[in-house]
Length: 146
Image 1 (cartoon, rainbow, N blue to C red):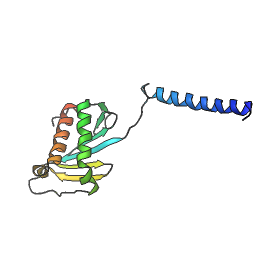
Image 2 (cartoon, rainbow, N blue to C red):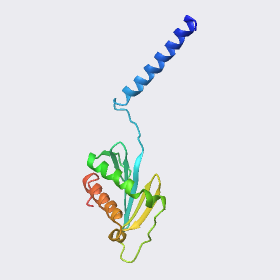
Image 3 (tube, rainbow, N blue to C red):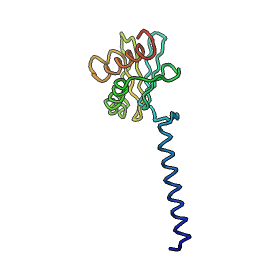
Image 4 (cartoon, helix red, strand yellow):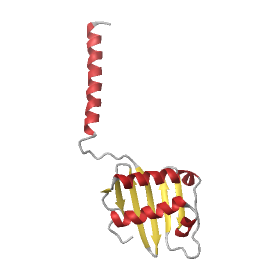
């Protein structure tokens, strides 16, 4: 390899390394990096709708409002719920409303969608956890009554 070619190659390597370092450094500079959503949960009842969008970056948006930072515990709870619902989402679990239904839930995950009435939580632990997550998020993050 001639001296000129070697210098050009070293220059290219240096440029690639500098770009990589800049990209890594930018990650910690408060840039808006979208890591993707954990899930979108919609709860409907008596004409009222609550929509929660949980993002991997640790934010939650309530009814389309600006995202708010959630606790690490709540983010972990959302991620665990997403994992626990993955098989049901892949199977496109849909439980129809039944007599006595007050609330109906729809959770969209990467694997698919799960839809169920509040009464289904009595026989499906993960659905009960989803209901609890919605209630806690509505109260603690959105400032709603539940």
